[in-house]
Image (cartoon, rainbow, N blue to C red):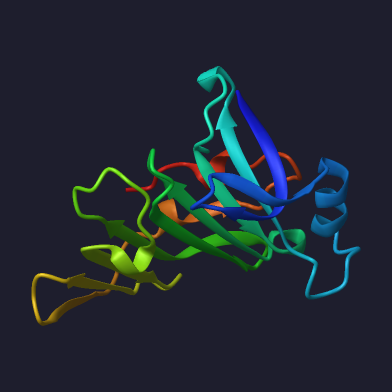
Amino acid sequence: MIRYIYCERWAYSACEPAGVLSAAAARTRFEGKVPDPDDWFTVAGFLEDAGGASTPEFVLEVTPGAEFVYAHLVDQWQRICFIYNFRDVEGRLFLFNRVEYTYPEDERYLNQAQASRIESILFKPDGYMRRRLKDKSKATTEEWEYKDVDMVDNWELKPEFGRWGALGRYRG
């Protein structure tokens, strides 16, 4: 079971929510009843059996109606390790971008700019995929393009409010 905390944003370096929202206030934003630019919200998902752990399993940034959802998976030092970007395509969510950050062996908080390796993958519903790898130990960025890639795993149903688990799962 997952416990959720709603907020305006997650403060990674402080390991805490910023601008805590009630579930009702977050739902109002989800339903599109709050004007832009304050219409999106953040939800942090914690495992129920994690006790008082301050590190969420995932952090989602959600726009009204889940038109866009940005999922962040973090490690025990609150460093963002994966970002999964979803957007609405014909009533379902499509994972259109995946970014993985690899950090030096430091056992402390580091921001994304301090990652030693960044891999990003762009997906399109028609089966196109572009993979870009930046290893800071090298002077170049490698890039690959693929066509006719099976995108079945890139689709998710749009969630009902409070059913965030599928969007916060690890996707490799």
